[in-house]
Amino acid sequence: MRPFERRYIPKFIQSFVENTSVYIIMKDISPFTLHQLAQIWMKYQEVSRKFSNLVFLDKINSDNFNNLLIVGDTHGDLNSTLRIVKPFFDGKVDSILFLGDYVDRGEQSYLNFFFLVCLSILWPERIILLRGNHEDLELNLVFGFYKELQNYFPINREFQAVLALVNAIYNLMPLVAITPKHSVCMHAGIPKSIPPLQLFEQIPKPHIGYLKISDKKLKKELFNAFIQVRWNDPIITSLKMKDEVSYHGHFYYTLEEVKQFLELNNQKRIIKSHEDIRGGYQEVFSDVLYHVFSSEPYFGQIKKAYTIHEEKIGDITLRDLDFNIELKIKG
Image 1 (tube, one colour):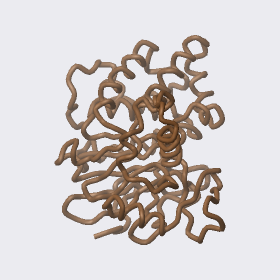
Image 2 (cartoon, rainbow, N blue to C red):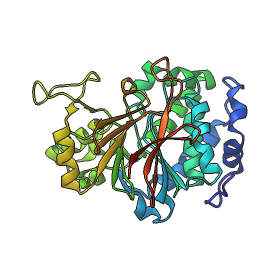
Image 3 (cartoon, helix red, strand yellow):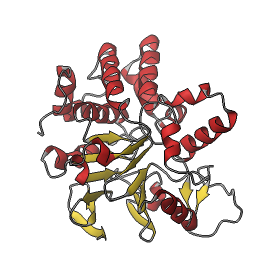
Image 4 (tube, one colour):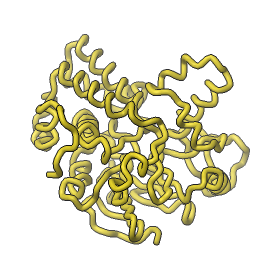
């Protein structure tokens, strides 16, 4: 396994990452005590506070992200996640960017979520976790993670404490990352206002901090960006009305709006996840908007899932979950 980069990491975190697959068969037995989960949160807080909600990957470390794997939704599918990270452990890629939605729907949301958080603690300058729309306790109550946590922590006072720790981690996850190849990576899509990227840097960490902003106009603008970057969907056809909402209940965005956003921010393309209806991969708008989904199989909706591989010298390629090349996306 690749050497750990951080010193003074509790041994239980290292041990969990090295032996995660063991816990798949140990149903409802937590690999962590409540005290250990609090330690994980404290370590993740140290890592995440170094980054704003807009992360320029080449500014973290100019070398680490020149051989980058970009990963879509994993939704509690630890088996898919373990396949995805193997090339990183084996040294075939130098870094991984996850686009959100680590929990809900799958059977191992708890293990999947904390495995990824632990990875980011151990390799803080190589593993980046963006926040998706399912990193939200209200959705977790409906889509499974909430109930799964109750199974692990049946005592109510412990359960409430774990919820608070999970929510605290959610609120520290960045929202947008820019790769060295000028790909704008986000969970869902661009806000309707078509903002400059710097707007995301103004969103506070923890995210809940927007409530303390006194300027009402700015507060609304930041809140809208925070929600829409995790929820908005692309639409291939023209809009019937300017503010037409998607099947998720949030805004659609068009090819023209994508082009405006990229031109405004001097970037080349958007890579997003979020929509299982688009399958494991789709080039939504030629050359400028790509969708990737990384949980396999996924409730009959996705039989084969993918990741996107960016290298400094070479093509942008589509990979399956075992790192086999499927096709060239961009030269």
